Length: 182
Image (cartoon, rainbow, N blue to C red; front, top):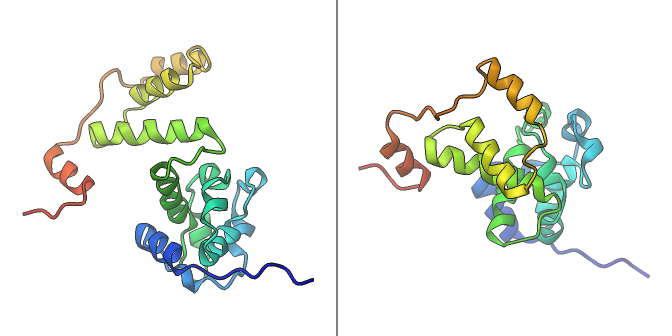
């Protein structure tokens, strides 16, 4: 008996290609991205498979995977790819799609960290580590975990009490919203 035939979905390809600015259709599955990725041991879908799943329109499997949240965005995949495909950018697009679709994350703590990071950047124009970590700890309820590390970082002036904001916040928020500047 033959297996179920998968019909590729151009809808997912075009959506992810647009959001990530990556040439997804150029991938010919050479596996160089997977061969160089330092975190494949923690992934349920390998980097080359992420691109293939997008090509095949397997959105549900991608959005429910650990891989999109495990990617450290080190960009090793993109540097090794003969076609310049940056899978970290594809994973970022898939994370945003998972959030938009309200998909239950495979790794809730990683998604919470991601959201705290983005909120910090939106509020300040750059990440404020202390504020981001306080928001993360508040959402996860892990108040005392990593306190000793935080105190060491604070003593070495690695954590600022107050955020350092960017100069032209109005322009930043305009760019963040995707509006054209006038």
